[in-house]
Length: 305
Image (cartoon, rainbow, N blue to C red):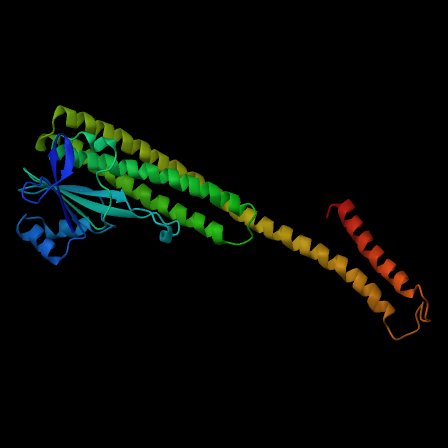
């Protein structure tokens, strides 16, 4: 799928393909890939890297364009089951156009940061900034989800919520690797500034991007360390909850067992007290059974077993 946009009035607006300066290819088909490789001279390996979620971020200089592979978070959906994944995006900067290749449709140009764009180079830098903002937003969601899972774990005896936390921890590892990879891309952009026609405003914005990415990286590291360090404690909570339930069931079993024992003894076909018919026989046996249960319960409570 192809989206075409152009910069007008310092904003990105949808337009026809003839005067487009920004082209977004979403999961390009075979014909679109052939056009990108043969007509725009995009390296086939670099194009494949744009669609590969495991490809690290990088910057490459080609004769007719500059290629950047950027990491960004995948849009989270309920069916992902607490797994936050990472995607790659390829941006190819030509003299007169910017080509973006992504594997899944996503709102690339949302947010007030795109309310003022001056050039396709400005758009490419703001795409990096927006990807960092998406990571930060997902971190807030992960923090909120982990808090809810912790509350569930406090009363849970199963492994369901603990496994969900493990999935979140695994997601943070992927995020940490992706943001660290983006950091290498940003540093490469700064060191290669003489080769790229950056304006002074672009260079200042690139410094802001570097700061935001470093802060995001630190946040992910802190969240990951906290989640990993508390995982053993939460596993112990589940084990302790299970022990408490087993203890309660053991007490209940003993309390029920003693009255059963009393009634069973008086039901034996041997010479026992109250063997002759008496109007109080039933109530005497019932009272003895009840008292055995009460005494056992009181003793358990007093001893705090």
